[in-house]
Figure 1: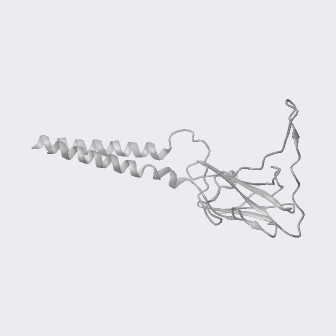
Figure 2 (figure 1 turned 180 degrees about the vertical axis):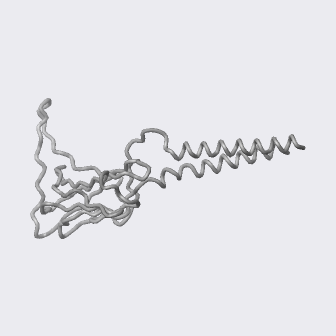
Figure 3 (figure 1 turned 90 degrees about the vertical axis):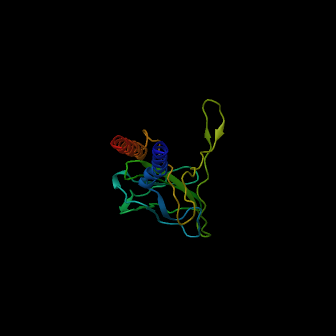
Length: 202
């Protein structure tokens, strides 16, 4: 009976550790909550700023927000102005009609870098179209190709909010997994030692 009790307690502790550990690193990672312009927005007036609001406070030294047009040219913009969990860049030239890609990179509280991107379109009836991509010639093959537009990785799941964390490669095991494993091992050892003492006393 005691053997079954020990096995049941160890199994319960192990299961609890598995359920709790995965949530630890995820909770520590930052994520995009709201964007202006929003993902896939079709604007009839060109924006003059891009504002991104995140789940956690931003570190100005590790916050990057860029804007690229359909030719993959980076649109001139100010450095991000950070206010708590919000970062804003001011666009320094009028945007013509076309598709634009917003890309960002921030750092979470645990030091994990998080990056992502999304697109929006300017369709102002009174504005000129954006510059068309210019073909680039490949010197080795003699063929020409247009520069690709920015991809959309880690984009918002909706125009207003999303978890847009396409984090950079981890340098090793997440801290939460190591801590969870250590907690489970210590708990299991404690339960086993307690039961062995009771058994000897009996």
